[in-house]
Amino acid sequence: MIKQNIFTGFLTGIAANIAGVMLYISLLSNADIDATLKDAVANDYLGKIIALGAVLNFLPFFVFLKKKQNYHARGVLLATVSIAVAVAIYKFV
Image (cartoon, rainbow, N blue to C red; front, side, top):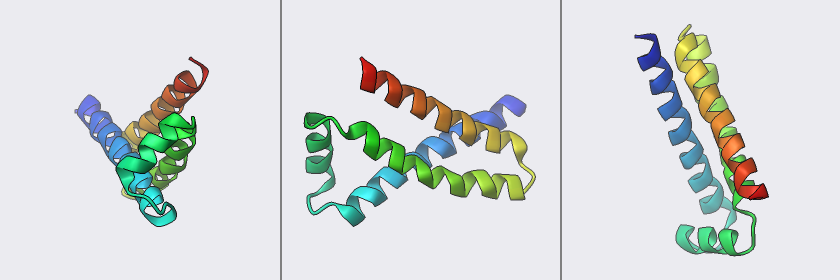
């Protein structure tokens, strides 16, 4: 049961990050999402966009903590750290 709660929190964190990236692009970019992502890969700022999208993970993290769902919150934290590591690897490799 604990592993399932962490996994649910992890998926919530990944979904919140994707939603954050989409929200960031839709609010601050003049181009559509596909063109913005292609431009980000070509000009090497995709990691910055993903990192800014991770800011949205604060919302489910604190909601889970407020509801005393600590293992769900751990999953969101695990997703955030995993994304940070993936961005670092992408940046330096």
